[in-house]
Image 1 (cartoon, each protein chain N blue to C red):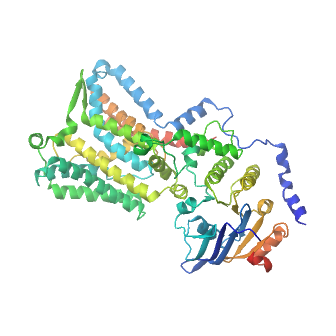
Image 2: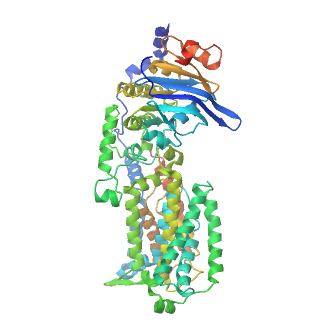
Image 3: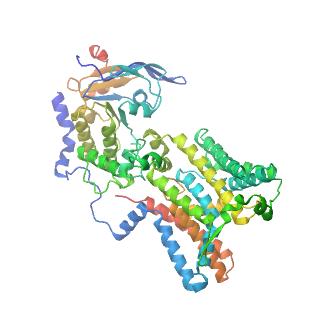
Length: 358
Length: 260
């Protein structure tokens, strides 16, 4: 009876005999050009922003000529982008895990205020004050991470709350007091470290710009060539799958938010270098600007896709548009309008790339 | 039986509030066999499997692997002990490559300074091993081991998940509904994979609702009902309708086999 049964049960599979019998076949059939582009973009998410960046530099170069294409102007863009770029690194890490960090700007400002006030109010050695500022940023990030990973609160809500809390703490603690640039230069020059410049034939590189490039390269290495980096992507992709596959999801999440906080504190330090002074009222738009850089840079807000190089290109695109349009002399509202178009296009392209199929 | 079981469970109890998912459940898996676990929805078979794979910690009872008691509180611990699970959702990260996925959570680092201090991954070695493991299971016509998993078909993804389990499972491979989401042809491929893995000597626990598949590959069938094992039957001695009848309570379980 059982023989009969087993025989019958496979009858419906008889039709398979005639069908192709090769084991799983991986990607051999021909693709159209569009398919190939889609696959290429899928494998290299930073390509789209890179192409847009090159095109926009070329267009402004043609329109403005030497006024735009001078070493001074091009490096000025880098200086203007440095702070947002560094904060964008922090934002990239969080967004790759499918989170979002609205508190980055506030953490940056609070950390810079801590560095300044610890030096001038308490008379701490400036090195120690800088370390305290960095620790302050990391602590804020850690609180975000713990609330997201352990309490399982949505990152949007957690960081929306932290944004208000940190910003309010910043104003309460600093009593809205700015530390003047001259005082810093005289007594605590280390705070302005990232404002130092290297001048190469008209091209001006601040240490802040160099810090941005180093940070991007380091993060690019860490994200692509270490287990931690792969786990960050896996968590953004599908946290449950990552957990089952052996990733310690909560621990990695906390480390991501803590590192993001630390990077924001670094941005706070770099901001003192850029402004010269410590001001509790700056950086109000850094949140949105960092998210803009991340999105235009092709990092998916749904997590797991994109690269920190793309974020850098995204930040540079915004910088090129802002300065280029200002040099042309248009109303600055055109900049915002075009950036808005870029944001929506970037997300549309992201959705298209996601649909890649075998 | 003269062989000693490789994985056993005795008197497992797991309660979720007032619901008793496992009610003194027993389990035995012998070396080299395919043991199918069947049961109606809510019978507690997935809780049983989660207990064996470390995803759930039972409230009472004992699990022994190779005769030694084990207490898993996380899937990682079960994996470290040599029990690999192919979950129904496959636990793959779609955007990452085949090689990345196979080594998720147990990546290899480059020897020397780069690996120790910069924690650099040994991509070459991981790709080579991944390719070997897929080839062993006849899954290799892959040109690109760095292809993202989301560009693969359902059957290919299943193949990657099975290859990962077979590559690292030193003692037991558990498969949860491996054919549930697949078409006829891809299911056939996965059943062949299961037989391949068995031929290589690894015992398999197969959870499935698909009776033809169960009867085709299983050496023994563990029937779960109301939170416990009520029978273990030989698929050659019973028909599918008997198995379904026992599973749903329409037929009394055979007494003698219950303790086998």
